[in-house]
Amino acid sequence: MSYENIIVDQPAPGVGRVRLNRPRALNALNSALMDEVMAAMAGFDADSEIGAMILTGDDKAFAAGADIKEMDGKSQIDMLMSRSLVDRFDIESISKPIIAAVSGYALGGGCEVAMSCDMIVASETAVFGQPEINLGIIPGAGGTQRLTRAVGKALAMEIMLTDRKLSAQEALDCGLVNRVAPLDEYMDLAIDISQKAARRSQVAIRLTKEAINKAYETSLSEGLALERRNFLIAFGSEDKAEGMRAFIEKRRAEWKNR
Ligand code: DAK
Image 1 (cartoon, protein in one colour):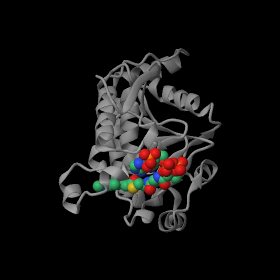
Image 2 (cartoon, helix red, strand yellow; image 1 turned 135 degrees about the vertical axis):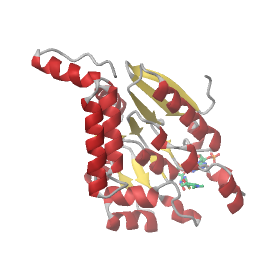
Image 3 (cartoon, helix red, strand yellow; image 1 turned 120 degrees about the horizontal axis):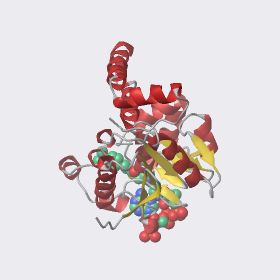
């Protein structure tokens, strides 16, 4: 499939990568781009050769937010009736791990998309923020919820009420990102982390991701019940038999993803 707003490749065995490619607009997220991102990710999700995905931009910008020029002139009803950024980036529908590799600006919807991913690897130049307040709107793709859960109320308030930006190091210190690396190394690090997940049993990976995400959605007892259910599903898999046999025989497991 050919795309106009993204570049899709496989930088390492088992790893699919989607690069946002509107550099002149700092990868602002317009409707066409978001539809392409989701189509590419759904393709990787359905591809048995792919075990994990990277979503990235370029060195200057992961994404500077939803496309303000596209939103300008749209009415409330236009936004209601069209599929929004939130609908378009339906992260819940992707079962494989997604690593956001962030360099430069991750602002507004860009920050929200990165936070929707399962892990974030940042370059030292990354800048995170939710500057919607400058436009007279509020974050609408999860910022008030995901950022607050990640960094806590005090810092979330400062970021969203005063347009306080976070450097990569600050984002690391407050738990928003997993890792920070120099600009010329962050992508290799994201690929390395992706491969570590891609090499595992995809049955166990999928069940683990579902259970961790549930921790944000539910009470402890419901979360524990889902974990137990997923544990038992994993316990019945061919990969469980192989994983335990390989340990006992002191060899590397060969996953069937069954
Ligand atoms: N949209 C459109 N174009 C953008 C853009 C954006 N978000 N950000 C940058 N650009 C464009 C600029 O207009 C400029 O294009 P030309 O004028 O050259 O044609 C080009 O990218 C380069 O930008 P600058 O010249 O401004 O570059 P600088 O290095 O000077 O500044 C900057 C970089 C990132 C500080 C600045 O560009 C900036 O402040 N950008 C806007 C950041 C922002 O406000 N982001 C939040 C957008 S609002 C929804 C859910 C969620 C959302 C919407 C709806 N629903 C549920 C319906 C999300 C909303 C948002 O994200």
